Image 1 (cartoon, helix red, strand yellow):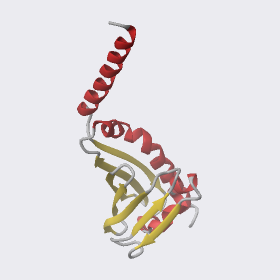
Image 2 (cartoon, one colour; image 1 turned 90 degrees about the horizontal axis):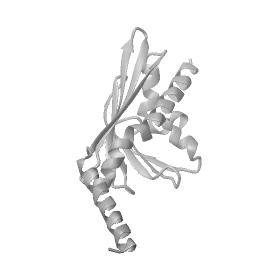
Image 3 (cartoon, helix red, strand yellow; image 1 turned 60 degrees about the horizontal axis):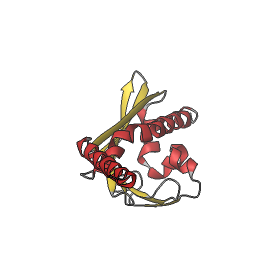
Image 4 (tube, one colour; image 1 turned 90 degrees about the vertical axis):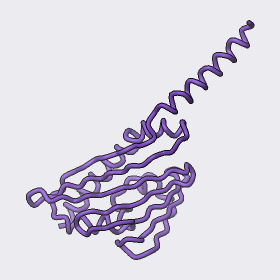
Length: 177
């Protein structure tokens, strides 16, 4: 067997191994971060329930000031949607699907370029006059073995953005008294 055939066989085996491992990886992911903000939930909730206000504390908007964002639906209520186009951050759609004012907001998120979506929650819990803000995002990337690698890396890819966004939210709310 010639050297070219050995190299080709080695590459084929690597590709097969890559896909085999991908099939064994989980398809589900969960990213979760939290922070305590020195303010009552009623001061925080308007910042998360109105998707337009995410531009004030979300990190994605700051990284791409040229991002085009369109909002529709009722402001800060179930049915409010944001749709964005960004060469840097990717394009997507977010819609509020459930809301319990001053307690919990649930949204669906979809990235058409990747044909992937998730569900997110922002949960506000009173802690002796302060509020614990928990941000969770979870989903299933489907059966594509390549996407399974994304599921495994999702926490390290998105988690730091959640941490920075929550820190920005904390600063915004605590400085607006």
